[in-house]
Length: 279
Image (cartoon, rainbow, N blue to C red; front, top):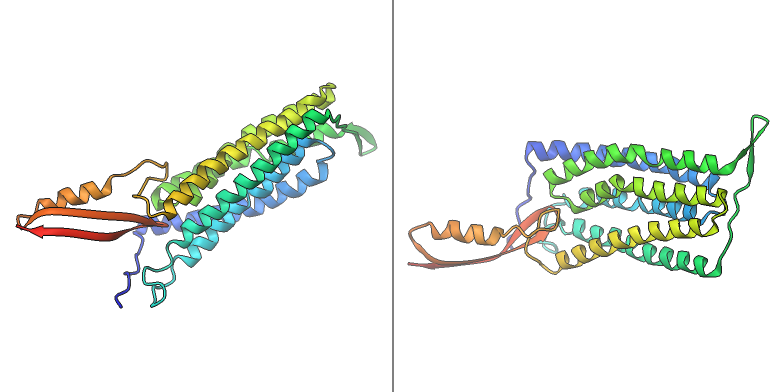
């Protein structure tokens, strides 16, 4: 049995991969601090609870990326002649499903809270002998969970474009969009302080809808990718590579007709079949 060749990255891609792995380790360490801090100050706020769960879900893409980039480099064998590159696509689906399922749950939970007209309260917290409103601590925690991801997300997206890695681009976009979650959650917390009980649930619903939207688009992309779809860019646009290859083959004087089929396996594209008719 002839195995698929073990594909090697270019030097620029290896450099991007090393940088991406470092960024993901930094992200995991950073998210652990955010999750712990948010849990301490969460209180009874629905918006804070939803933002905290989103931060927990933000751990999924970095972990999936690190596992995927480790597994995909295993050498092909008689049981996996195409290698393990598709592990990246499978882990992308896992990360997307986590967002889709949890986003659906949180949205339903937030809507129920609105209909039940639940009135959350935020108490006082003693600090250095002074009683401070716990809402201010919540706002500080949300701000800590906002600005660092903006820089991490920008760096991850740059690496993802070099690597053609959809897990990494998804993670980067989620990081860059975290400011919306923080703004919504801060609005919910301040709304409670102003006596607007509905502001907290409304903010939670907004955050949950954003999670659900991301999960839906990513799950759709991951599922169609596993169905041997023609290759797309990390932005989801079709590349039409098969047509380009066919035109290149037809430039040879001894080829009169050519048909090419391509599919994605993680970072790489595979030729499924090539038909050529000699002149």
